[in-house]
Every structure is written in structure tokens, then in C-alpha cells.
Image (cartoon, rainbow, N blue to C red; front, side):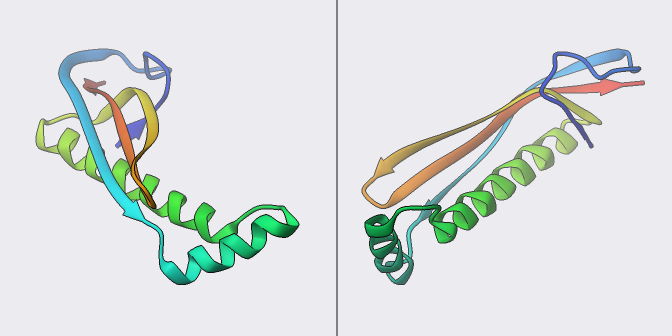
Length: 104
């Protein structure tokens, strides 16, 4: 599956639009990681536990978007975007979306 943030795939021609595809996941913080993160805020710096959690959530969302595109017969996804939002205390949603296309 070709995944790009542009509105086209360089060197390829879009033959068919398959429509909007998306994938999302909601991840919550682990209480143990939350305690460590709280301590980290005292001294500053990157909170690696949260960075890893968000990276994993992005991968899940992208995988689900790709699966939907495959089910529609697409071989590429253009104009891909990622978005996150807090949906409740200690939980974030990550959504990946784009336009599924068939290219040659």
C-alpha cells in the first residue's frame, strides 16, 4: 500500500477514486506510566512512555485505515492526515484518514 500526504502519487496516475478511508483507536494511560510521567514533569524533558504509547496508537490507526482501503480495492492512500484528541481524562483518540485510490 502506498501512503502519501500529497494529493497525488509521484510517477503514478490515479485511475479510480475509492473514497474516504479512516482508522482510529483510543488509548489510555497506564497508572504506572502516569506516576513516572508525573515525576518527569518535575525535572522536565521528554516523557518517553507517552511518546511510545502515542506512536503505537498511530500505528494502529494507520493499519486500520490501510485495511479499509484494501477492502475497497485501493492500492494507495493520498492526502493522509493524522489527528489526535483527548476524549476523556487520561485517554486520547488517534485518527488516520485519507482518500483511497487505485493508481497505475
